[in-house]
Image (cartoon, rainbow, N blue to C red; front, side, top):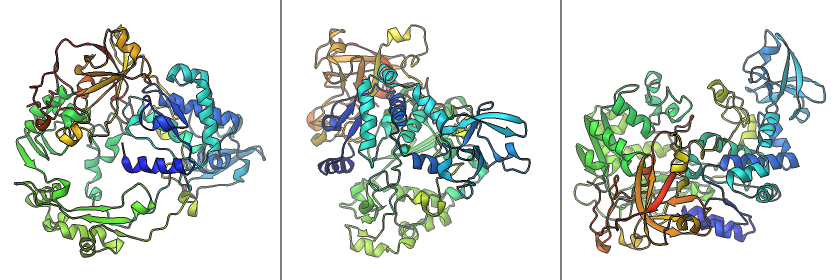
Length: 618
């Protein structure tokens, strides 16, 4: 559904690239992949560990990269589960220097993260086996972090992976071979892995599987492209540390989004409704339609009602805006200037600086988000941080290091490209390394271990305990997940006839056996139920789905009057809001991610026909 990426994938295939698609559904690129792995929702971590296990056992990995650029050689104490440090060996040693095992010398060697260097020959570092090291407290059994990772992956042999994920064991082996033989490898994932209660460890498992290829920032791999030089205008430096520690969620998940000042909806609702860790009484929203884009809309509505003051700015009068004390209309992208420095998808795109001119004047009282923020800043006495309300001055300040002027951009609406050069394997240049505690890709994370989290990637099956009540697996036997519709941008654009005519009403996809077992035929209206809520939709039978998996659509609320197509309530029997099905009973312990894509549900035929008179929620 990201068109520029999709085009790049097709072009790469035409040049001979091989494609592996990991997706519970068989549409999209799965239909043209060299290997489609139909993974059960929420079990990608087990699949990644299983593929990595085959690659390690067969020797299909970049041993040099693992030795030199991961912390795999560093020794882990078997008595404490912590990395062995230089201070463990010597009273004058440092606790931020670590120890590896020199297999040729049969003795420990020190690694200094400051210089990113070992005291011995890197090629002699052991990646497997156990050793006994003399410490100040006596001899301690240790083994390399990579050996622990190997042991973890062995727990996910191909037959175990087949049982957990539904992916046949021969496909697990084939994927491992394909990754090794088709290097260099690049990979892409996004919310398909993020929106699960096991998201952190899943993403670690996939990232370390990729590390085995040694292709990070290599030609043909996941390259960090050179970027146009700009000034940071985020204002992050203005927030004192005493304020940063107040970020909602930081107490419960110190390694999560709150560490960088981000707040999850669950933590926001808790602060508003329960006053924990302190009461939130006001909210300024810029375009976030919380009630149709976050879990548990009933809880969200209760929180919005509780606020003393709420301001919302958006393009349309959304259900969330109905709870605001002040509503501000926002100009669309075509009614205002828009500056973009770099466009992500490739070096050529990253080299482009563009100031998009407005195509038409703003309608009515609409103003750009930037104008609203700058005007608000002036009234709060923050003029000096916002260039005295001069947006053009802010753009000039941001652009100055690039050498591109605002006047030149306005004279060239198609943009200005700068002569940037792609450099590869930048982590190896001047031993800059990675932005981690050890300066390496961390197979073993002592920071996670210090917070009571498994330092190695692991997998916890979300299926058995998605619902807490006894007997709930029998009551909600189906695995519920969702996917983005390419016709729409999340919860937007269903009001546009040119798009809505392609997808006229909410849908849910199931395997024929799932529908037949419930006496449901293709095209009938069904009701999906979870312990947290319900939604209705039109069923579509899909043979390529795994039996027992339900794919529903999210983002439905807008009506399309031109096509006489209704809007939908956000909660209740007539709701078509996928997020009404999802609660906050299970969260990822690190990130706080909600299980949006791996929950449990029941499906039954609905006796109430879809009403053509339904309106958008008030």
